[in-house]
Image 1 (cartoon, rainbow, N blue to C red):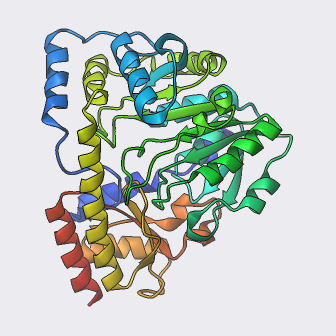
Image 2: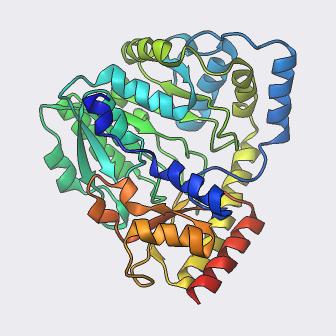
Length: 381
């Protein structure tokens, strides 16, 4: 075992799914829907298989999909890019992130992580040989200006930004993103932005891509994919948009890491990305109703939390319900209550910061959420 892998632990999120499966719990831990992908998108995948899109695709993505990504990036994100020079299709957004970090960060480079953060971010930095620099978010998961300014220095190579945010549901606004942009430009750093939940926004909020601010198009890798928006987490089709220099570096890593994403699913992803705007409006409305329902239920039970502005997670404080730490509480929730959640410490470099938190995913059918709420109310009395 290498020194790098000794620094890594297994995925806590996937561990909770395995525990949930063993005990027949309702899985509100891992963020995958239990309802079907759009029928037209599934039909497009079947057509692509039957049309023999079954061999290797172009390493950095099928031309059809890269054109669809460029079209969507222009009308939704305000990012204008060329399919051949600026877009790389990857095996999910997770590979896009990993390949980007490995392409940009060298041994000893510092990489800023805004915490709590999705558990894959820190391992990406470690495997690249970089040094993770955790910066805790402030009240209501807002960017703490003084903490962030103090983290930047001459060794800062990257900052990883996630909006809408997993696990908190925070959506970063123009002021916070503008601060990040200014610091990146001042210190010559690059930003990698994970925007996989970009279409899941509530209460009339708009998504802002960091690459559209100032000169950040030259120093931002914008990452997204089809997993969350199109209910296809198992297809593993993601992408990264960046300037030509960053893209060339990213493609070298991607080529040797996975060769290419699944060819027929790339063709179906192109169909998905060309969805009517009404699809995205309905998507956000559907998830907002789920947020409203599960928020009210968790509040009634006694959990305390920041009301999500986007994504489909709630990071909740259970201190008023139990004296257990987060691992023991999550285990009891799964085995005794029958509802699986994720321990909060998995989202922090300092586990103490998450010892009284658990994460709920509400990317589930309404009937699933009702059953989960009933189990929790019975369990907590």
